[in-house]
Structure formats: structure tokens, C-alpha cells
Amino acid sequence: MVSAKSLALREHYATPQHQRDTATLGMWLFLATEVMFFGGLFTAFAVYRMYYTQGFLEGSREMTLVIGTVNTAVLFTSCLTMSLAIRAIADGRQFRTYVLLLVTAGIGLVFVALKFTEYYLHYEEHKVPGIWFTSNQPNSGPEELFFVFYFVMTGLHVIHLSIGIGLTALLAFRTAVGRFSPGYHTPISNVGLYWHFVDIVWSFLYVIFYVPGFH
Amino acid sequence: MTEPVLSAKAYAWAFASLLVLLGINVGIGFLNLGWGSMFVALTIAILQAGILSLVLMHGLYERVLIRLVMCGALLWFLILVTLTMTDYITRNWLPIAGK
Image 1: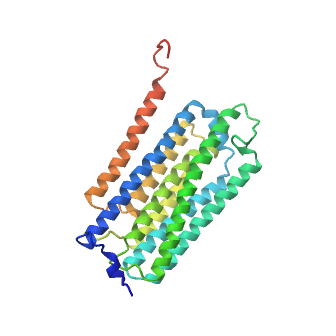
Image 2: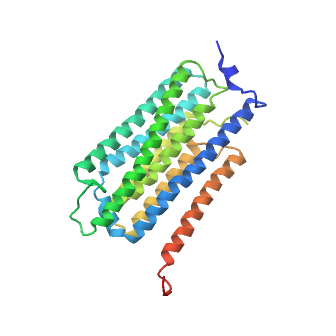
Image 3: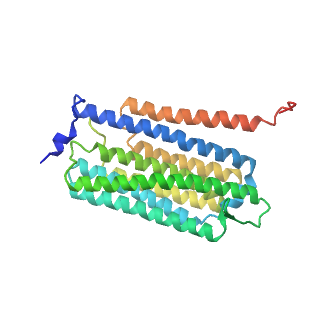
């Protein structure tokens, strides 16, 4: 049987620390490209919101505020369980890590379910831009543009989160078969970085799409 | 240097802070502060991003190279936003014919 220790160090690294540093740097560089990916979308949103302030406010008033707020709390909870999973594997508690990773993936699924419930509500209210959109507001054009941004940006976020759920579930399985140890758990740490980044993106999506609709 | 991992208590505090900030965001959202609402909401989101990146993602405890990548990502994002917004905001400031 292959031990966790022998799996840890690949032949082209001098030490486990060298391997860990390389993997972590790679993940951070990937996240930097993701900042630019979502950054372009946020910038485009800012430009159009500046031009069509009233229409975008009317779009925000169509948001389901309760679902958006609950979903934010749900994601923050998943951040806690992911961090506790990393803590647990660092302490050598494999079963606890396995459970916490499964819980994290489960919470992610709750988020996705709530998000698709919200999408369905928008469909029922005829707020799907381009194919199923009606509005009695004077700024229906800009409001439709708001929903274009909404579906594109939250849709990309859900895709990212779904990838995170899949990776977290895979890590739970790999933890169960003993692939990780206190000395080697870089994949869990790196997926944790990705998971937290996706949560950061959501905290800004919540602010630009939901908060203006509160009052 | 080994992998930075904080205590469960530290993670719990970070989680509680995130929820408190979310509560403040919801509370302020119901007040009509005009353009100030978006300013406050964005400030809170930046604080939440700070907690997530510096504490939960261990940005505070990583080596200098990782922190440089973090700062680089932020810097390039700010360049993107600043140059784009200064262009759009100032377009109508000067009456240039043919614009």
C-alpha cells in the first residue's frame, strides 16, 4: 500500500516544503488571474450602472433579498467548515477532516439550490433577458441590461462554486482513503484558497445586485 | 516555514466577524443614504474580503512572495478600474467636436 508520506514528495522537488511552496504559489497566481477575470465584469457593471443608475436600481428591487442574504450567510458558514477541515487535517484528524469536507460540499449544494430557486422565481416574473423579459418600468431597457449582468456574473459564480463542490467532494474521498496527513495536505489547503476566493466574489456580487434593492 | 494554520477559535472569530458585517450591511441597506449606501456597502464588502483573504486564506501569515502576488492582483485590478472609470467619467467634460 502507498503511504501518504511517499505520495507527498514528487521527484522533481528537493523537499516537501519546496513542493508545498510551489503549489501554493501556483494557486495564488491562478487566483490573481481570476481577480482580473471577475474584475473586468465588475468594471463593466460599474460603467453601465453609472450611465443607467435608475434602471439598475429598478433591477435591484426585483431581487429576492431574503434568498440573497441567506445565501451569503450560507457561504460564510462553508468558509468556516473549510477552514476547520484544514485545521483538522493539520492535527491528523482524518475522520473529522472527511466529515468537514463533506459538510462544506453539502453547504455549497445548499447555496446552488437556493440560487436556482431564485433563478426560477426570476423566470416566473418574466425577468430572463433576451428571451422572456417584461417590465412596466420606464427604464425597462437598462433594467434588462441589469439582468444580463446578473445572470452572467452570478452564473459564472455558480459554475466556479460547482467546481469547488466537486473538488471538495473528491478531497473528502481522498481523505477517507488516507491520502492526506499532517505532513502533506497541500491539495486541501489549495482548494480551501479557491473556496474562500469564490466567497469573496460573492460578497461583492451581493453588494452590487442586492443591497441597492433594500430601500 | 511550514504551512500556516490558525486555531479553530481564530477561524470562529473570523466567521463571527463576517456575519456581523453582513448584519450591518443588511441594516444599512434599509436606510436610504443615497450614494452613501453603495459606499458603505462596498466598504463592508472590502472588510469581508480582507478577513477572508488575510485570515481564512492566511494571507497575513504567508511568505513575502505570496503577499507580492496578492498585492499584484489588487494593483492590476485597481489599474483596470481606475483607467476605465476615469475614461468614462471624463468623456463629457470637454466639448471636443466629433467625439
